[in-house]
Image (cartoon, rainbow, N blue to C red; front, side, top):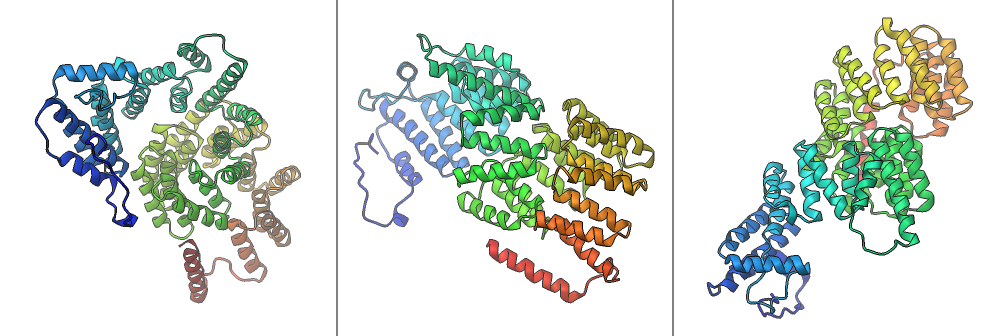
Length: 562
């Protein structure tokens, strides 16, 4: 409007009656004018502005059409005018004032990148890639190279993606997305240092604070490389070191919590997610991971509050969909599955969405679909959880060879990982002939990581399966002397209940509930044990009245969320 010479003043009409920005764009592009060079250039620029407004309103298809019309309109602008505009933009870094020339500048490369962004938002990645490849490499800025690298990764052309991301770091060494992508593609910390050395030098001797920043930034890159190579302990140690330098840094807190989630340190991860939320209550990054942890802990009060907050902040984010899936999983697994599927419609590269969907398919006895889900997660980025899900799915399909191959692959990828060793043991433990091998793998996992309770619980199960209940009790009691964990109490209670030591079983179920009052397994086990102690068959069907009462409780929970 300013370029048209029209002065706009806000009216006193209510906000609801004021036309949105896209409506002003309609006036711009529909206004008539002389069919001369300046008018055509102004028309093209107006179409670009209209496209920007539509993109801001998430009307990607209409924005795409506006940008394409602008490109078509620009073809009528004389070559001399457009080249002059490009020179002006490249030398000054910004568009000249509309009063400085009769011809408005039109940057074709910038519009092509906007067309690509619209295609990408519509999941039309091939068309987006074609547009970006049409921009000469020397004319690509940092944002364009970053976009092109992402598109190459989606098309699985990692070699071309690496070239684009490296170019980003040559332009600016502090691009988080480029560093994470290159680390996942196998770039070492030494190779990163060589790239940083190619970044533009501002001249003069760097001050001390710059050198300090360079040191911690190199450490951050090392952490990314460790995690990408599945050295979770090494990455976690560096993040904890960085937290000393940058206390209350939300980004590092979330990265620490994410790594702790992957390696099974659930209590520590929950604590760090809660710290991050105290610092920034509106944070959405990794909040779906936090929701899953709360669901595993059966802390539905906190989960309810988290989902309510996320719906208030941004209901359209994939993290919100996953949090809703976690909330509904206890009461309606099919409804939870619809939310997991919705998260992937919002972002088809959201790894947690694939893992949640795979676990739900396992719960719904569809391991064939679960295999597809976990494979989808692995194609994006393989981690321990996708390997664990694949092994469970293959075992449910009685494909023991595939399960063993997957577990061994995890062991090769994740060197010195107790979790990977335990995964191989889980496959061997399925058959009676493989139990001795399973025992060796479980014991190796415990030696490698003495605090790994998952291996201890699996070894206790193996002892019970072979009739060595005394060994199972001794193992679990030894661990309880060092770690007061509700899962250890539950396993001991199950062993005691199986050997008719009901009073001991009762004591351990109560201890588990004292540690975690929300533990559903402890509640169900205690309810079953009380029936046994009363001489009632715990497997007998419940009365209809009790079931109806449960439904009422479920309806009340739903009302609380709404």
